[in-house]
Length: 352
Picture 1 (tube, rainbow, N blue to C red):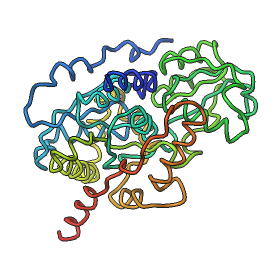
Picture 2: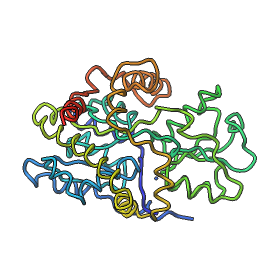
Picture 3: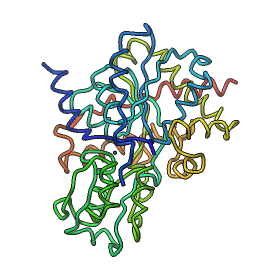
């Protein structure tokens, strides 16, 4: 399967980009050439276009529907949609401002901001509600059973984060494991091959990992509601200099969700094709991702005292990332979230 790849040493890459700015049986997806070079090579083309990056995650495939059904054009969004086979490349390309917008997780965005990037969350695409999993071999029945075991994950990536959350809940840390840092696809292959005892992976590598006889899910993102929200993130420059295009992106997203609701079969076919999986397989992945409605978005941007609030989630996530060494400096979160675009869309919807 080629549905690929929420990330490749994300935090190391962001640190390196930050330096420049200041002076995941072998899965074939692992070896697919990324398209970040194409995104960079075409950086000077399409004057006035917003370059929007996305990669393989069920909550982001609606952008492909928007492209194929010409929903961008219908909402006055001048967009060059950039597909990335590797999630890392999309993050680092946004951090280097070689694209203006990208779909990515909140913890990766916080890490980017911690490294000096000036980025803004303007929309919630989805929450992971089961597609990120910790999968274990036979005989491991609790998080406590992971102590002393070989556990593979892509270091710094979102499923590494999920693993650390689970360990903390059980009173353990990464030091209690034999942690094996591997790219997500290779981690899944190592687990299937019996080289490690457990693995932290996301769909579709979850399907691959579960092919090991006796393997099972130990816990997933469903056990940590709100811990892995996915967003449309844009550069501060785009917000300041071209807010109408940010609005057009937000309008396009909600128009696409409307299209998907009215044309579910056609939309699913488009997304499954982009993911290079069957419709049935795609539907399985989609169940582990909760797409956010307009109402969900409006609520998420409000202050709160639990993980359903982005502001609260960001503060908790920042503290956690600092504790485990994945954020070197405390980022300024005061300007990270901007809900004016979803609010403007909601006001127009009321009038119609």
